[in-house]
Amino acid sequence: MAIISVHNLRKTYGEKVAVDDVSFSVEEGEIFGIVGRNGAGKTTTVECVAGLRTPSGGTIEYGTAIRDLKEQIGVQLQDCSLPDKLKVGEALALYASFYSRPADWRALLAEVGLDPGAAFAKLSGGQRQRLSIALALVGNPRVAILDELTTGLDPQARRDTWELISRVREMGVTVLLVTHFMEEVERLCDRVAVISSGRVLAVDTPDGLIARAGGEQRIVLTSTAQVTALTALPQVTGVHRDGDEVIVTGTGDLLAAVVGALPPDQLAGLRTERITFDDAFLALTGHAPG
Ligand SMILES: Nc1ncnc2c1ncn2[C@@H]1O[C@H](COP(=O)(O)OP(=O)(O)OP(=O)(O)O)[C@@H](O)[C@H]1O
Image (tube, rainbow, N blue to C red):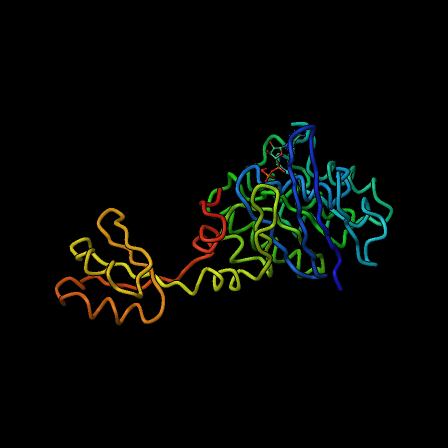
């Protein structure tokens, strides 16, 4: 049963079409990713889902678990900011007072690993993001919308935040995650909608999207390899140099074809690489994420 179903969503700001035609459904209990580069329409889409913006067209349906958007959809939007001197515990207590059935905010703070006595100004980037997750959860929502949570975080803080997002799902909260980090999508999301210029290009599992990239494989060789011998192979779809390496992409039995086409001394350092969600994104949208 879908907890959120978006049908042909459109949102314009004057002449500007921010969201052109977006449709997707989020199942209860999943982490659903919305991925696309800057300006693709991700934030506008989730703001419409959260009831913070009025769509210009299309419909958004909610499952029976959502009776009141404000109560049952918790939102963490980009750039959370609070008064410098406000303490973490005070912020949680204040936000809890907005809801009819708030979570136990002390337990929530323990879960995200924050000291209730810490002042907002003293928090690191990662701690601020953990606070924003706690604020999104304090109303005991059924769905949490998390928008670009890990942008600007160092790798450790990003990994900690990913762990926390997994725990949010384990608490039974459905997560709608906006991101342009492909690694985040691969690690966290059950399914993902790829958005470009206000339109959905694909909705699938991360693995499904990778498979859609044409079942392409990639082989990396040292730069002494004879590129012309490779481009003539029917299995090869692309050859390009990247610094000291030659990257060969293709389909079918690419490895055997490449090994057969080159003398052994040119096969030194040969390795095969897994196609990543990054590659799939590139194949779908024609441009790199971010
Ligand atoms: N209030 C607004 N008024 C006018 N244009 C807007 C407004 N909000 C967003 N836009 C424009 O709509 C388009 C989609 O913006 P949106 O913020 O939804 O994209 P996004 O995918 O979330 O991008 P980002 O990753 O940069 O946040 C952009 O071109 C943006 O400049």
